[in-house]
Amino acid sequence: MQSDINAVFLTTTKGDGAVKSAAEWTALLSALRKEQLCTAEDEKEFEKAKVVLPMNFGHFLRMIEERHAAAPLRATEEQMRRLRVALGDVRTTLAAWDAAALRPQNLLALLRAHSGALRELRVAEGSLRSISSAVFALNEQTMSTKDQTVKQTPSELIQTSFQYQREDAFLIEKEHFACRVRDVQYRNQPVRVIKTTPDGVVIQIGYDIDRDSPVEVVKVPRLWDDIERLTELLNGFAAAKELIFSRHFPRFLGFNYISDPSHKLFFMEYIRGQPLFGLISRRQLVPDSPVAQVWLREIFLALKDLLDKTTYVPILPLTIDNLFVKEEGTRIVLRDVRFGAVRASKADSHEVLEARLLTNFAKLSLATLSLDSLEPLHTTHPDLYYLLQLADAAEAELPQFLSNFIQRRTTFADLLLHPLLAEYDDALSLAEAFAKDFLA
Image (cartoon, rainbow, N blue to C red; front, side, top):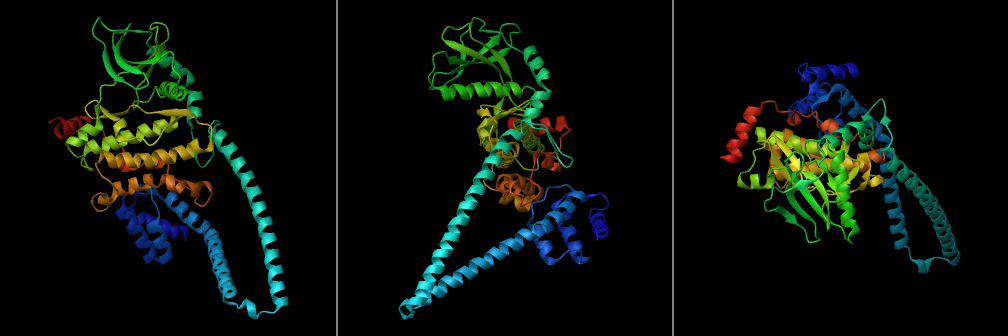
């Protein structure tokens, strides 16, 4: 039967070996139904399934296997449904009885049966609570430590941020030392202050004392009683250092605790970018334009770096106010991203954070396209609609994956294969499109 399915698959995809569009996916299901290789029920289930395109034959076979593997679970659910119906019937029968017409011995028998059932129910609830507590404790312990170990299985290779930091620690320190700023000077000019926060943090522009290049100086009061805010700032600097090889975040360039008597100085890369929100407020971005394709890919890769490169937990959701455009529209930089502590709990595990970031990607993409929902894309841009639908559902489907109800989950690696997230090679036409749309 597998050979027959493979033959239909190759015929539908015209020998390419992969389903590349929503139209080909629909044609494949119709062909399988026509050849009687799937039932009408199977076809309906596959039509409702979340599909990552392009999809090769191996991925399609795994979808079929997962559908059949879920059959026992569905049978169990059906059995529980019947039991609930039977219980409701019993309740209805008891409510219809006339207790006054029953004999005392019948009422006594009912009372004993009811008391026995209650005792058994309490014993069962106690056992379930004990099992649930043990499983939760074990699961929490496992999920909180697994990302700090190397995880390599034959079916799926996952490189966590902890592994990346261990393997590239020397290169990260070398790069940080090469661009490190010891101190800043101000060219005997008035200091340009970018922002002053209510809690006393001052962000201003200084100049590297060795290279005379502009640097963002973050001045933190030495006497500061807001420990939570200070910890968040320090986490942000540490995360920026870990992200030093990412092109989507400002670099952390060092610190100086000596030169200023009232502040500690932290140095960040100065990004001269245009706020993305300001650009799209002047002109709406067209979904099939080169600029839209590049910006969505840049946002996607930036969030992927948050998952793969830093061990600190980004505080989500990120909004369009965090996005800045650089280099004639070819680069997206994320600024003012806040970070919590190092990942150390189940809620911050690789899988959970990946699902949250993918859902955040869908929200940011809609905001970039000035849309409130996915529905307008359903008929006009179906491929983009299905891509963002998959990303948006990643967080909702994760509990089913962690409970083994489904065998696969949506990942950055899967979605990166989508044609809409492919690298755009024509830099000249992209610059021209950006200039025409946003600089004219």
